[in-house]
Image 1: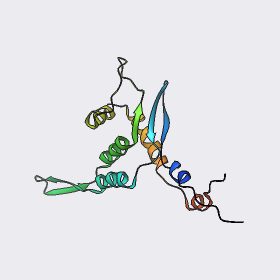
Image 2 (image 1 turned 45 degrees about the horizontal axis):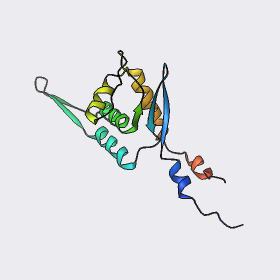
Image 3 (image 1 turned 120 degrees about the horizontal axis):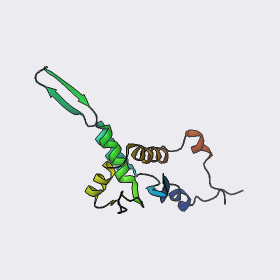
Length: 138
């Protein structure tokens, strides 16, 4: 039996496209199936960039990371579209990017977390076991 020639369409189909997320009450958001390596690196760069805050009165300084900034970047890069409207029934805009960030900041925290959790799930990759057994059968 000859080895099957890999089909590049099968490979890319696993990572491209969009995934619907039920926001509740009939609203749906659509996320990228997977961030690119460059997009993931942008999010990581925000997370690992140290934020130093000095307190001259106490003669202390603290270093922290911008977890919220990294999370916001992941949602900004992943959220493609949605049908969500505000309280008056007006579309909640997602472009340009500055407006998209403002819109996302206005979301209830559980909705933002729902999007973030789904993004984490979509971008976790396959386990070693899944990687070994992954094979598309025709």
